Every structure is written in structure tokens, then in C-alpha cells.
Amino acid sequence: MEKVSPGGSPARLVGGVVFWVIMLFVISAAIATLNIPALTAFFGLVLSYLPRVIAALVIFVVAAAVAGAVGGLAHRTMGDTPTGRVVRAGAPTLVMAIAVFMILTQLGIAPVIVTATYIALIGALALAAALAFGLGGRDAARDMINSGYRKAQEQSETVAEDLRTARERGRQDAQAARDYAEDRSGEDVRTGTERGDHAVTGRTAAHPQPGGTYESDQPGYRTR
Image (cartoon, rainbow, N blue to C red; front, side, top):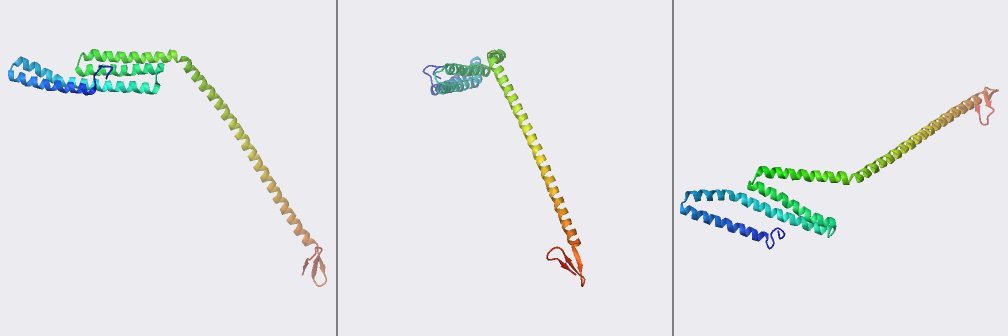
């Protein structure tokens, strides 16, 4: 607010608006007392236009406060650096420029021209930003793309190596399981064969004895 109006303040501005609103109503009452039709009609038009003026003043006050807050924030965060100075000067200017267009639209001053100018300025800013990024950030964008491509290649190679390792481990585990199953089946076959041999040997080793008693060659084997 100080930058826009040196020595001014929001309180003083609001006080001035209230003063002139009261004065306009007093003048309106005086003109109505004079009963002059032309003057009464003119002052009626002025009073009908007054809400637009008040809205424009409110927009101006809010924009000035926002511009000052943005400038102060840029100064606190970025300090007295070159970028900080640019932001501190550019951000409030942009806010006030937008506020000027809003005020002119609110007052109804050449709305077609104001709207066209606003659209042209926004388009010019967007084009300037696109050109600045396209020309100034071309190398940076190329480096970013190349870096991302290299990282993707490295990741793909790592994933392929992990898959090969996992496949080889799976093959080894399957082979170990088959070997274990074959060993177990061989042991079961040998165990069954040995048990059958023992049974046959026990039956053929028995000899008949007098009295119907059979005595085996194996110790402790007797039967009747």
C-alpha cells in the first residue's frame, strides 16, 4: 500500500470512502430539495454507479495487500539474492496488473478492449515461458531424458540378471528334490528286499526233529 500510495494506509482509504459516501448522500438530499429534474437525474446515475466504484476500491485494497504480502514473503524466503529481487519486484507487479484489469472490468470501462488486452497479455506470458523453457532448458531436458533412459537400461539389466538367478536356483532346487526322491525310493526298495530275504531264510532254515519239532539254524528258533 505504501508503494502504491506513499503515506497512505488501508484505514485512511476506508475512511475516505466512507466520508465521500456520506457526502454523496448529503448532496443527493440537497439536490432532491432543489427539485431540478436534470440535476436529479444526473445525480441518480452517479449514485447507481457508486456500487461499482466501491467494488473497484475493494479490489484495489485487497490486491495491494496481496502484493505487499507476496513481496514480503519473497524477501524473507529468498533474501537479497538476484532471484529474490526479481521475484520481489515481479510478483507484486503481476498481482497489481491483474487487479487493474479486474477494476476496469468492474467499472465497465471498455470491457471488450480490456478483455482482449488481458487475453493477449496472458497468451504472451505463456508463450514467453514456453520459449524460455524450450530454448533455455533444452540441454537440461535432454540430460534428464538421457539420464532417465540410462537408469531404465540399468534397471532392466538388473531385473534380467535377477530373473536368471532365480530361474537357476529353481532348477537347482528341483534337481535336489528329484535326487532326494530317488534316494528315498531306492532305500525303500532295498529295505523291502532285505525283509523278504530274512523271511525266506527263516522258513528254509528249519529242520524237522523227532516228535514233530522243527529247529531252525537260527538261535532261539523253535516250532512245533
